[in-house]
Length: 231
Image 1 (cartoon, one colour):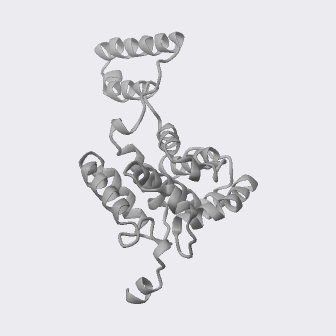
Image 2 (tube, helix red, strand yellow; image 1 turned 90 degrees about the vertical axis):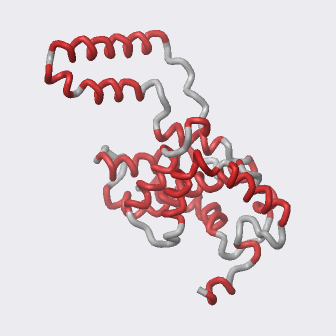
Image 3 (cartoon, one colour; image 1 turned 30 degrees about the vertical axis):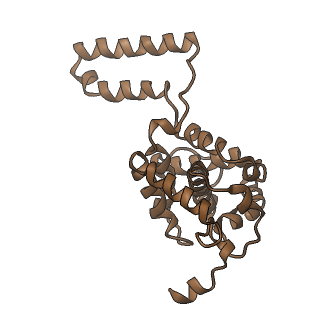
């Protein structure tokens, strides 16, 4: 829409091809070079981010899902489990395999049981988001020291809408804060992906802004965290 485009200031964009030509080329090239393995995750993110200020629970679920769609190379493998835990897992897995051969009922749930046990060795969604947050440059991360707490609440909200998992706050509060939880996950995904492609976050962080959604998120983060903690 022309009226909206005309009202956008140069610093409202994260990287402006006219003002930051070399940076723009670098980010675009890196984005395209890494597109194939990350296509599904980025598409999931973009679908939600394009909704702008229109929020639905499905958008929160999609924002979280984008992290699950990232390739394994986007994450650091989880370290070895304690010997006792690994031994317990192996024992459980062997029991399931043995029991499934003797019982049709157990065999029906064999794959589901083994998959769930296997999840203990891998990264859960919260750890994936935390790892991506850890890649965000300090010039941004230092302004959001309570982000790990915001991530935890965002993932709990997502789990509530997907699995009906219990929450530490009233259902009404989850709905009221769902836009913040959605913005949190979209912010981390977008910033981590762009900074990995060469986006100059230090330059952007120092620029004045008017309509930048990411800077709006940063400036309003403390107030939203007060609301989360009071819920």
